[in-house]
Image (tube, rainbow, N blue to C red; front, side):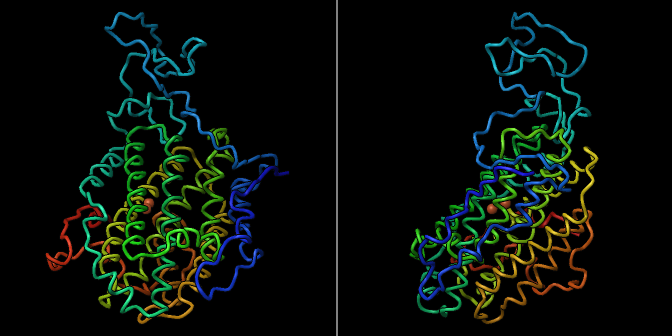
Length: 442
Ligand SMILES: [Fe+2]
Ligand SMILES: [Fe+2]
């Protein structure tokens, strides 16, 4: 029997304010927490751990619980300390006196990269090299080829466009896309920085994830910059995910996944905990970043293609490049975990995850595009979601969830990752960004 699931968003909806003029007040019953994600998060992938308690309110995060992690160095060779030498090559059991919570380093030999693991590793996580996962280090190097801030991009024309050129339906799309994205990026930052990083046991993985945490906060800054520049009501826009059921639905799914792994008592040697963690990682990299973010910018790119809101769209192009990297890295990490730990995924749980994601995305598209805008409709958006979901499934070595969707509804979307260099120099900043083009998705 499952116990003690306190949804942190529960009860927030009915008493919240109105999202925008003319919007129907939300029905509390419509925005109930997504059952599939929360059930999966509560019960483990296979649902075969009836007594498991995933309590999202247990938030205080300790330092890494991995037994091979040394938070503070102990005695080092040559510094006069007595070195109790062991021959096991691992640090487990070599703990400091009771006065210290951190394990002491007692083995003086360099870490053997073959001993590293993505999770549940026993090697000293403070030794970066030699690498076992050189590709992870390369992600970090590539991410650092792109430095930008939202202040680099001229937004003056966007202000004029918003107030003088956009239709009411286009403003509705613009505001709600921003509203969804800004909430999502905070969730993404908390997921990777608070729930995922501490479970990694190879430093080359954590290094890139640390960069990812920074990038997620940069993305939040970018949305805030757009919201401020255009002059939108900040408290209303930021609160919209709590009062619009169709935005709330996506956020709820992500929140359930996040809080199922944002606990200090997780032992990834437990198979159900491990599978739940893997499912959450698949969700965040394959769906949340790989589909919902990747596809989530496209309504504003559709405006950009008509010469509207070009500053905002360029901001989103930079973000999209980062998200491509995040999704790609996460998919690679999760596949490595599956290999190393011998994880067997439950096909029914995977199917339920895709179906839930599709239903939430469809409801979201129905809301933001309740009135289609020129060149973009909810049908186009949903078809593109299914097409991208198939791509992510292939990358994850999973069965395509929507085999009927073989054609891209937005054939131009992938090109958005490449910032066009022919832009007028005085109009926008021309920046070379090398990483996105180097990724091979299929
Ligand atoms: Fe982001
Ligand atoms: Fe991301």
